Image 1 (cartoon, rainbow, N blue to C red):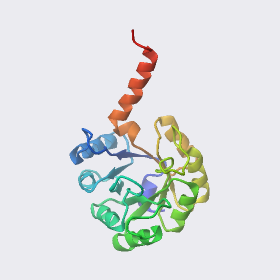
Image 2 (cartoon, rainbow, N blue to C red):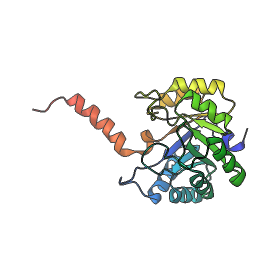
Image 3 (cartoon, one colour):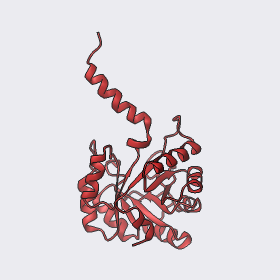
Image 4 (cartoon, helix red, strand yellow):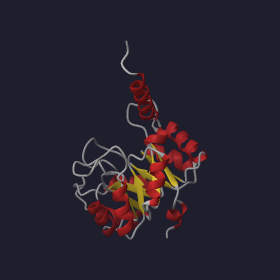
Length: 230
């Protein structure tokens, strides 16, 4: 097994991202967030944006999964080969990209993109998928690792309040490459269950690094408990 993938086996990877317009949407802030979760025991970091990735790479030696979100619909996670090559140039160890069955903006197939990243940069590729069939196709296309990142985020995939652990289990059972559980993992129990279902590693983002969402969860629970005001 690749040494980098071996380093995160059975461990937690933390996604350090903030959405445009939010108070934390700043590369320096995300770098500090990455340093904070590293101090808490994260075995790896997943982050997006070229400036964020450069700063995090300079600050930490942990395995770094990089991506570049560009666009507002369809395929927007590292959508083209040019995006993928730019991510690799930041020093990220793994290039994450949309590996759903939807057309890529540059017209290349997933296999063509994966092959080019391997040949031109030597970086590993993480395929973000939403269904079992996409996971199988991504492994066949040469992806080094498959993530369930987009399960529930495509119009045709199964959605729910929590992670699709059945998908994690099926992919982990059938694929020849490691499977990383990601997407709507909001509790330590869910993260542990993902490993028990066969995940190689677990990525958690919102529940650790997105204060606005965490605050909404607590505020909603408190409001429900308080009941209607007088």
